[in-house]
Image 1 (cartoon, rainbow, N blue to C red):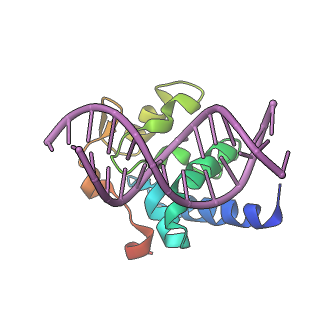
Image 2 (tube, rainbow, N blue to C red):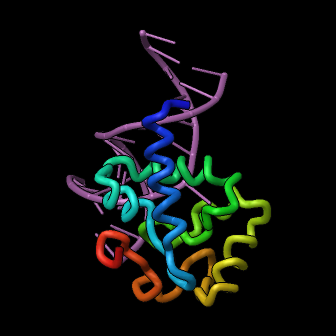
Length: 110
DNA sequence: CACATGACGTTGA
DNA sequence: GTCAACGCCATGT
């Protein structure tokens, strides 16, 4: 692992950790906040790496569509939805309901 | 060193 | 409005 990359990952983790309960954010929003608008995919990659870290609630991070794209990467396919619902986020068909409301933009609220 | 892959996003048809 | 293709950048082989 390269130090610089770790820094990027660390930044992503920092943002995800600061996501309020009952709120979700998107990979692109995080990438944009970090100034890496074109690295939205890398954010997802970071989540994959963060998969082992308990401090990083990856379940609060969804794609721009509000769809739980990474649910398959969790232990159980339903775990992600379960966690979100447990926090008060309505999820249906692997999609966050009222995504516009629960959406948390670090660039605006942080 | 070059090729293929991926928890995404944007643009064009 | 939906669907397909391209681009971006880090990782793994």
